Amino acid sequence: EKAGFDHFMLKEIHEQPKAYRDTMGARIDAAGKKVVLNEIGMTPEQIRSIRQVHIVACGTAYHAGLVGKTVIEKLTRIPVETDVASEYRYRSPIITPETLVVVVSQSGETADTLAALREAKRNGARVVAITNVVGSSVAREADDVIVTWAGPEIAVASTKAYTSQLIAFYLFGLYLAQSLGTQDSSYISEVVAALQELPNKVEAILAQADTIKNAAEQISTHNNLFFIGRGLDYAVALEGSLKLKEISYIHSEAYAAGELKHGTLALIEEGIPVIALATQEDLFEKTVSNIKEVKARGAHVFGLNAEGETELVKVVDEVLTIPATLPLLMPALSVVPLQLLSYYASLARGNDVDKPRNLAKSVTVE
Ligand code: M6R
Image (cartoon, rainbow, N blue to C red; front, side, top):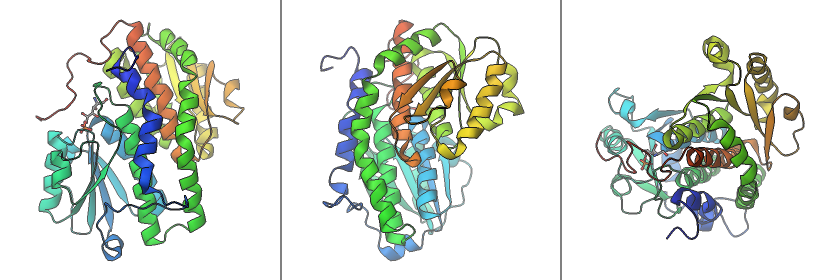
C-alpha cells in the first residue's frame, strides 16, 4: 500500500506531480489559455458583488490560505483576509452578503473550520470550499466546492493536500480575474502555461532528494532553528516550520525576514541553522540583507533560490536551487524541499514519521 516507499509521507510527497495534474485536469481549457471552473455556481453579477474575501482554515490548510490571499489580491485586487478557524469563529468577524468565505480543509471534517463555515452562512455569505474529500461535511454544506484531486492522504503531516490547495487557489484566483476582467488574457494564459509546467518541475526537485537529506541530517542534531522569508516566501516558511515541528519535534520558528530585528534576532547565536527562502525576485535584495544580519551573528544559513539566480550562493553557507517559475507560483515548488527536509530530519531522529506523537489526522473536536 506504500507502493515501495518507506512511509506514506514520502509516497505522498512523490505523488505531488500527479496531484497537480489531476487538480488542474479539466479545469484548463483545451487551448491551455484559461481556467474553466464549472463547479462554481456564482453568476458574473454575484462575482462582481464580492467586496471582500475571507479565507478560513486550520494548520497547513491555513498556510495554503495565506498563499491564497496573495494570489487572489494580486489577480483581482479584492481585499482578502486569512484567518485560523478557531480564532475566526469566536471573534465576531464582519461578514456580510458581499463577503465571499473560502474554507480550506483536506478532510472536510475539521470542527473549527466547519463551525466557521456555518457562521459565514448564518451571516448570509456565500461559501466556497476547497477540500480533498468529496461528500465531506464541509463539501456538503458549502455553496460551491473545488475538490483537490490529491487522492487519500494517510500521513498525519499534510503534503500533497497542501500543494493541491495551492493549485486550487491559483485556478480560483484566475477564474475570478477572468470574470472580473482584472487581468488581460495574455497574462492569464501566461500563468496557465506556467501552472502546467509545475509537475515536471516538482519531479526535478524530487530528484535532488539526496542534497536535501544531507541538510536534514545536519539540522537533526539541533533543538532550535529558524525559517525566514518575505512575501510568499514567508507563507511557505510558516508551512516548512510547522512540518518540521510536527514530525521531527525540533523547535522552529518562521519569521518574516524584515521582522527579525524587532526582537527575534536576539536568539541568533553561533551555529544555529537558519533556512532562508529567497525565491521572490522583487524582495531578493531585502532578504539578502536579512541573511547577512543572521550570518554576522554566527548562523549557519541554508538558502533556497530559483535557477538563474547567482547571488545567494555568495552569502549563505549552503544553497539549494529549485527550477524557476513565476514568483506567484513559487510556493508550489519551494515547499517541496521543505517537506523532504522535515521527512529526513524526522527519520534521522528515529521518529514515527507517519504518526507523530500527540496528533490526529483529522481534528473533529475543538
Ligand atoms: O483536514 P484539514 O485540512 O481541515 O486539517 C487541518 C489541520 O489539522 C492539518 O492541516 C494539520 O495542520 C496537518 N497535520 C499539518 O501537517
